Length: 144
Image (cartoon, rainbow, N blue to C red; front, side):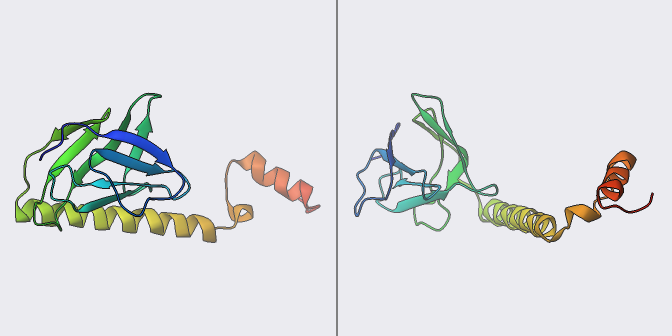
């Protein structure tokens, strides 16, 4: 039975079994999970990361962005969760799925390479504005 809405529940840890019609949200695990809205019974996990899903809570309802495409399930259901409502989207072709997965792969690679570069970067080596470089030299007792 296709669902048209989900009730959200904030939890610390995920339950052993999920009930249909509920979106379980765990802030400590930065993730949400629910049973597929098509009724197939598969568990859908949506991790909240800079390259996966974003959750918006407006005090009354929740939304997930981007859409949920269950391409690995037999049902291949595709929907949005907007303000606790399930908005059904068109089924994607194999080419669209392949292109979407490639976009995701590139986005993850780009993001995590940038994070690594930022972590490896020494802030003392940052050129920055001329006055900041001067201040660093003065603070370190070096001649300018």
